[in-house]
Length: 118
Image (cartoon, rainbow, N blue to C red; front, side):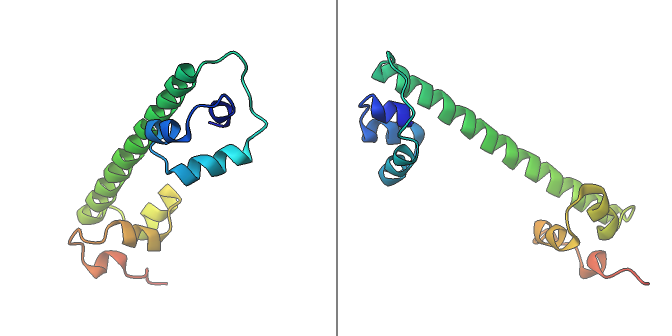
Protein backbone atom coordinates (compact mmCIF):
# COMPACT_ATOMS: atom_id res chain seq x y z
CA UNK A 1 0.00 0.00 0.00
CA UNK A 2 2.82 2.39 0.85
CA UNK A 3 4.43 1.59 -2.48
CA UNK A 4 1.18 2.49 -4.22
CA UNK A 5 1.03 5.80 -2.34
CA UNK A 6 4.67 6.51 -3.20
CA UNK A 7 3.80 5.88 -6.84
CA UNK A 8 1.10 8.55 -6.46
CA UNK A 9 -1.89 6.23 -6.62
CA UNK A 10 -4.77 8.28 -5.15
CA UNK A 11 -5.65 7.50 -1.54
CA UNK A 12 -9.33 7.29 -2.52
CA UNK A 13 -8.56 4.63 -5.14
CA UNK A 14 -6.60 2.56 -2.61
CA UNK A 15 -9.38 2.91 -0.04
CA UNK A 16 -11.99 1.86 -2.58
CA UNK A 17 -10.02 -1.22 -3.66
CA UNK A 18 -9.10 -2.37 -0.14
CA UNK A 19 -12.27 -1.39 1.70
CA UNK A 20 -10.26 0.67 4.21
CA UNK A 21 -11.04 4.18 5.44
CA UNK A 22 -9.09 7.04 3.88
CA UNK A 23 -7.46 7.86 7.23
CA UNK A 24 -6.37 4.24 7.69
CA UNK A 25 -4.75 4.19 4.24
CA UNK A 26 -2.84 7.37 5.10
CA UNK A 27 -1.71 5.99 8.48
CA UNK A 28 -0.49 2.74 6.93
CA UNK A 29 1.28 4.65 4.18
CA UNK A 30 3.10 6.87 6.69
CA UNK A 31 4.18 3.86 8.70
CA UNK A 32 5.77 2.19 5.69
CA UNK A 33 6.96 5.14 3.65
CA UNK A 34 10.30 3.50 2.86
CA UNK A 35 8.61 0.92 0.59
CA UNK A 36 8.90 1.85 -3.03
CA UNK A 37 8.72 -0.35 -6.07
CA UNK A 38 10.00 1.47 -9.14
CA UNK A 39 8.48 0.82 -12.53
CA UNK A 40 5.08 -0.35 -11.31
CA UNK A 41 2.08 1.48 -12.74
CA UNK A 42 -0.90 2.72 -10.75
CA UNK A 43 -3.06 0.05 -12.33
CA UNK A 44 -0.61 -2.66 -11.28
CA UNK A 45 -0.57 -1.33 -7.71
CA UNK A 46 -4.38 -1.29 -7.60
CA UNK A 47 -4.59 -4.78 -9.09
CA UNK A 48 -2.14 -6.08 -6.49
CA UNK A 49 -4.05 -4.41 -3.67
CA UNK A 50 -7.35 -5.78 -5.00
CA UNK A 51 -5.88 -9.28 -5.03
CA UNK A 52 -4.60 -8.93 -1.47
CA UNK A 53 -7.95 -7.54 -0.29
CA UNK A 54 -9.71 -10.47 -1.96
CA UNK A 55 -7.41 -12.97 -0.27
CA UNK A 56 -8.02 -11.30 3.07
CA UNK A 57 -11.79 -11.47 2.56
CA UNK A 58 -11.52 -15.18 1.71
CA UNK A 59 -9.50 -15.77 4.89
CA UNK A 60 -12.07 -13.91 7.00
CA UNK A 61 -14.89 -15.96 5.47
CA UNK A 62 -12.97 -19.20 6.03
CA UNK A 63 -12.38 -18.24 9.66
CA UNK A 64 -16.09 -17.53 10.17
CA UNK A 65 -16.98 -20.90 8.65
CA UNK A 66 -14.47 -22.67 10.90
CA UNK A 67 -15.86 -20.88 13.97
CA UNK A 68 -19.44 -21.92 13.08
CA UNK A 69 -18.33 -25.53 12.61
CA UNK A 70 -16.40 -25.48 15.89
CA UNK A 71 -19.45 -24.13 17.71
CA UNK A 72 -21.68 -26.80 16.20
CA UNK A 73 -19.19 -29.54 17.12
CA UNK A 74 -18.92 -28.29 20.71
CA UNK A 75 -22.70 -28.12 21.07
CA UNK A 76 -23.07 -31.62 19.62
CA UNK A 77 -20.43 -33.03 21.98
CA UNK A 78 -22.02 -31.40 25.02
CA UNK A 79 -25.55 -32.46 24.07
CA UNK A 80 -24.46 -36.05 23.50
CA UNK A 81 -23.01 -36.18 26.99
CA UNK A 82 -19.92 -37.98 25.71
CA UNK A 83 -17.66 -35.06 26.66
CA UNK A 84 -17.99 -32.43 29.34
CA UNK A 85 -16.90 -28.84 28.92
CA UNK A 86 -13.61 -29.45 30.73
CA UNK A 87 -12.63 -32.35 28.50
CA UNK A 88 -13.48 -30.27 25.41
CA UNK A 89 -11.46 -27.38 26.85
CA UNK A 90 -8.47 -29.65 27.38
CA UNK A 91 -8.70 -31.15 23.90
CA UNK A 92 -9.13 -27.84 22.09
CA UNK A 93 -6.94 -25.54 24.21
CA UNK A 94 -9.96 -23.27 24.64
CA UNK A 95 -10.94 -22.25 28.15
CA UNK A 96 -14.19 -23.52 29.65
CA UNK A 97 -15.33 -19.90 30.01
CA UNK A 98 -14.73 -19.26 26.29
CA UNK A 99 -16.69 -22.42 25.46
CA UNK A 100 -19.57 -21.04 27.53
CA UNK A 101 -19.43 -17.82 25.50
CA UNK A 102 -19.28 -19.69 22.20
CA UNK A 103 -22.33 -21.82 23.02
CA UNK A 104 -24.52 -19.02 24.38
CA UNK A 105 -27.95 -19.00 22.80
CA UNK A 106 -27.86 -22.66 21.78
CA UNK A 107 -30.27 -23.87 24.42
CA UNK A 108 -27.67 -25.78 26.42
CA UNK A 109 -28.51 -25.87 30.08
CA UNK A 110 -26.22 -24.84 32.88
CA UNK A 111 -25.61 -28.48 33.81
CA UNK A 112 -23.30 -28.82 30.82
CA UNK A 113 -21.02 -26.21 32.39
CA UNK A 114 -21.07 -27.05 36.08
CA UNK A 115 -17.75 -27.55 37.82
CA UNK A 116 -16.51 -31.10 38.04
CA UNK A 117 -16.76 -32.71 41.43
CA UNK A 118 -13.35 -32.90 43.09
